[in-house]
Image 1 (cartoon, rainbow, N blue to C red):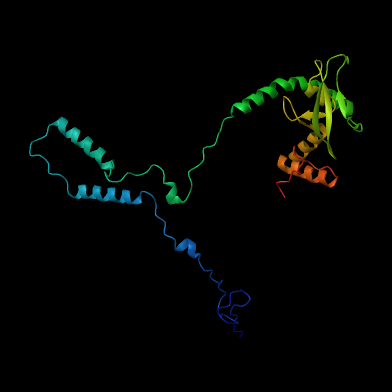
Image 2 (tube, rainbow, N blue to C red):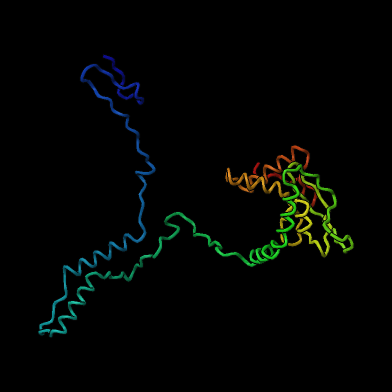
Length: 266
């Protein structure tokens, strides 16, 4: 016979005896006092209780009926009225049941109204992209056909896609993001090749439909698309990873004042 204290909390420390002795009993866990000792008042419960008391008093002390003999129409009217009143609730003139529980009773703040429809700026951006995308299909197909199964070439510092080289050109500085670096490239746009078309011709996709200041490599976007399908990675995580990768290679992103942009995820 092995005897151990009955107050032992673990299973190995339970009482053990031979034969038909004490059977094993799982130790009881104490209840959560925060859940069992907290008194919760339902909103509107007292008002319903008062209404039921008033209704019960009316049923126990009905009003005396008139001595006159009612007609058939009066009997039907009274029966219909009594059936309707039997299921009707008598409102309390001193208290009104709220349609929704007040936020201060439940300890919750009033919900913030969120916009479910796009605003005017979003509609304008969508319309601009919808107008621009058809002009980018052909340059994208040509670039994909030229770079298929071939090594990627280094993008020059100045890029252009003018067919005649006689058009007056406009120079725009664009920050371009690649796999291993980001750099500023001058883009020469003209009448025969718009700025987004010049970027697509050299494997870069603009970040805005009009007057873009940044562009992303098509290969980097393709890699992110494959990564998103496999791991459902967020764009913020990819941006943070690229910033970390660029910083380790010596490419530090700065703002207009020359200060280093801090990573919000670190």
